[in-house]
Length: 330
Image 1 (cartoon, helix red, strand yellow):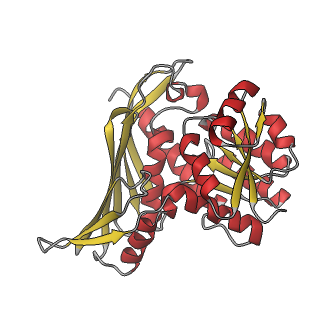
Image 2: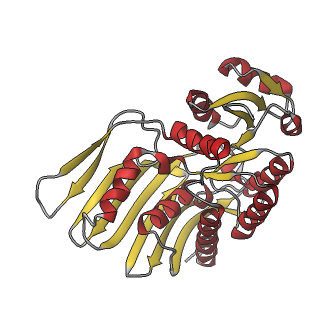
């Protein structure tokens, strides 16, 4: 293998406008190829971003011998298929969240990764931002006392009716899009798995049949009397916040999941006292995630988050989806 991880991009979804420049910026990686369903589309993106190779099919990219790892930004329901094909082709995989549509699919991916000896990481990029490292440091020090509530809001307006989020067959809907962040961060800050969940959703007809959630609110009850509340939607005003409340204060983050290259602040509040502003130097969390993944592949260091974590997140999403659908119309 070369001194740098050689990346291939498996698709031209909108998110690659952020991730391609980030992977190109990594110290230990380089983007050498991109694939689309047509060579024309792939060439357009390759020329725009200075990528040497353009492939007119995903299979052609996976067959390339000078690509070590792939980044997969495809619709949610296609993740399992193309992760397995990538592993069979000998490629390490960084895949957009959620890793797959169920815990069983995540476990299938884990078995294939073990069988091939290849690395797979679920792409929750926010976890690599230094502000979350500071947050975890404060929680470990019990800066706000005993953790009691976690409150997360994450929403935006997907807009046009042809957006992939309105197709059930592509894994669309709010819960598996913005909602997966809310579940993931709740599990991360509590460092536990929920014992019980409840959820209520709002639904519309999907473009390809069935019903799809446009917005959803959920409750996760963790051991030790910790409760996480979240609300999320893909047809709402843009919102993005995280509040963590304990017996001795609270922590607040504005835009926890956004791309924050500028310096930012983590607020610490204690019963009317002056707010403590923890200033954090901005860094691109996509870059940090890419460098962490490349280091793991090149040097054999463990990934910070394993596939058991991905399966556990998927299991909670499944439980919430079932709970909300059982309450539709209530």
